[in-house]
Each structure stands twice: as structure tokens, then as C-alpha cells.
View (cartoon, one colour):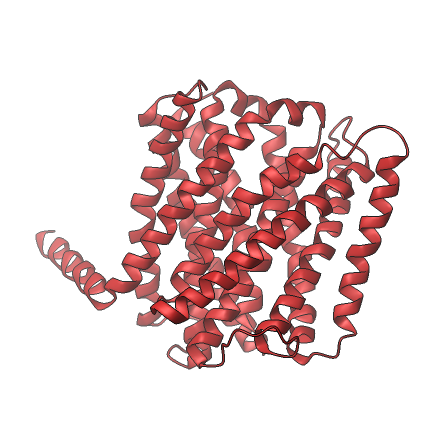
Length: 411
């Protein structure tokens, strides 16, 4: 037993010593993102009145938040690969690598926001959620909120990429947590702002028709642009983003149906955005690192993960322990400052760690086998890895969090 402990300790020190920069950059980005998502959680706790007035809106929230991370997290992953390959240069020209990526990302963000609205309404009806808001409400809130937040997240993603080039950061370590956190922070307030546009009467259906037309037109125009990189991104991204959106909508439905349980201790509602974001961000870091290594040929797409990939798995768990501990403590403190009921800091930490470890184990499997499957099919892991893992972890994270709440005995 002592020998096993010594070997584990020796392997841990070797892992940390082999790549200390990745540890520092990844932990810093995750902690910054957790702080940002704490604000998103407080926002969610503060708009419980809006959620009650607009039944079914919570079904859309994880999908809308996740879509910003899916679209722009994948954009950051592609930028990271471009930086590693030496092809990244900032330019306003549409035909450049950056220009084509920006065109594709904005077209995807608008069009998928429209699709999410339709999916949210369909899933709410299909699963018997009573008295939900109309499809016009869903469309306006989703597209307008998505457009507002997309501008901010796009600028941040480009800024992080430029900073990575200038200061020598590893884009694979910092993009996923920072971009997804920014998506969480900006999307929730943007959706809340969009709720002020909707109302009874004919105005909302008219706005829904206009915004829906613009969203579809943006996608069609991007497809007809003739830009090779943009076309590949669109062809590969639209199917996976639609699947990701459906998964996120089901995650939202899961939370909507358990809303009363969360409202009994609103601190748990504060925990939801940072918890879901951190599970996705951990998977996003792993996904980006594996995608770059597949592109560069430093790992082979084998059924049994090679040593290099297993080291990345171990690094993911090294990130997970402090991240899930601190996010639980900070959620409890923030909830108490805001006057929201909490089950207590010990139970909050147990819930976060138990749920986080369950979600992280599943994330590793999804990321690795998803990456090698897309690579073997001749697809770009950068286009599929982030959307696949962040949406999957929204659903898995929601179930894991609820299961952890039950196991800890909080009702």
C-alpha cells in the first residue's frame, strides 16, 4: 500500500513538473471563469420572478448559454490550432483565416439561436410542460439575447487569441473556460433584457418574424459566400450544434421540472451556472488539447488512450478538485450575502465535489472517444469537440448535480 502511494505521488509530481505552464494557465482561467459564472448564478437567482412570469423560459436558458460556449469555444479551439500551426494573423479581410472564422461563427450563432427557440417550444410541449410561453416569445428572446451576447463573446475570443500570440499563452488552456464563462455572464443578462421586448399583442409576432428571417438569411449568405474555410465550418458545425442544442434543451427541461427543489435552497440555483460551466470548461480544455495533438500527430487515434492522453486525463482531475471546491464555497458565500437560503457550506462542497467528479469521469470518455471518432471520419475535432462536450456536460452535469443533491440528503 505504501509503495502504491509512493508511485502515485511520484507520478503526480512528474505530471505537474512536466507541464507547469499548463497547470498555471488552466487553473487561472478556470478560477476566473468560475468567478464570472458566479455572477451568472446570482443573476439566475435574481430573476426568479421573470422565470415564474414566463413559464418554460428556463428550458431555453442552458441551451442559450451553452450555444455561446459551443460556437465561440469552438472558434477559440480553431484559433488555438491556427496559432500552433503558425497560420494565425489578425486581419479585417473576409477571406483570411480569422475573417472566415468570424463570418461562420456569427452566422451559426444567429441561426442556431432561432433553432433553439423552436426546439425549446417543441420539447416543452412534447414533455407536457404546461402553460409555456408562445413560440414568438421564444424566438424573440433567443435571437435578440443571442445577438447581444454574441458580439461581446466574439470580441473576447479574438482578444484572447491575440493575447495568446503576444504573451505566449497556450490558447488550448485558456480559451474554453474564459469564452464559456463570458458566454454565461453575458447571455443571461442579454436574455433578461430581451424579455422586455416581448408582450401581448401583435408586436412580438412581428419582431419574431423579422428576427427569424434575419437569422436564416445570415446562414444562407454565409453558405453562398464561397469561402472554403467558412463553408467547411458551417457544414460540419450545423448538425453537431443542432444535436448539442437539443441536449441542452433537455438539460433545461430537467432543471425546470426540479425548479421547486432548487428554490427551497436558492444557493443551489446560484451554483447551477458555475457548476455546469466548470464541467464543460474542464472537458473543453481536454478537448482542445487533444484536438491540437491529433492535428500535430503527437497522439494517435487509438481505442486505448496513449500515455500522453492519459496524462491529460490526470491533469483534468488535478484541475477539478480546487475548482469544484471553490465554486461551492463561493456560491454559498454569495448566496448568504444576497440573503438566499443555503443548505450549508459543507453540504454545498459535498454536492459540488460528488457531482463534479461524476461529471468529469463521463466527460473524459466523451471527449477522448468523440475526438478520435471525428478524426477518423476525416472531420475537424476543433469543430466538434467543444460543442459535443459542453452540451453533453450541461445534460450530464444537470443530472449529476441533482443526483449529488439527493445523495447528500438535501431536499
